[in-house]
Length: 225
Image 1 (cartoon, rainbow, N blue to C red):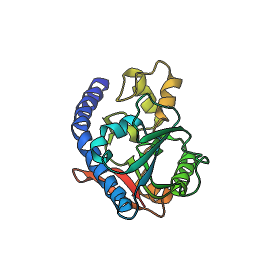
Image 2: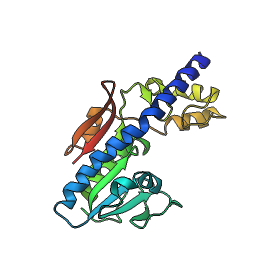
Image 3: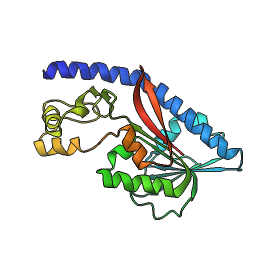
């Protein structure tokens, strides 16, 4: 069973790799349309990326580098990558009290909210995103898409945590290395908890929830205000 699961995982990893750049490009295009809306009425657009990295923006620089944008990346750590338009701030997505209400034109967050912990932490992050910017763009992988993007394997996120932990003790999966103890494996299972459409609606009640689709299935959810 393990070898069959590993084989399916490898195939899924290939499929994800093939389509990942196309999805990210389309997503960034959608985000930049919101930036352009701001720039149509203001000289500059201020953006805060909650939980993002400088590398993420460097990879897409061709899409925003020529525009009059000011980027602030908030993360638990600072990164070696730099850019003259990017300011790095150490901070926790659950508590952005260093920023006043509507400090930014747009809040951006890509594949972060599923990592912050329980529902109470997710709610704190959502409230802070909604508070610090008048517009926001929050993407997260969809719970009911069959391939889990962190394990890069099908159906694994629908299994009980204990079953996932046993799998992680047998072989590495996606971004996760093979666990050496059951306690380590159980901790890994708590790294990401994917969200459903109703959950995103509950977290972002003033947003339109857009579906990012692949083969007719919802791959990701994007909350946009």
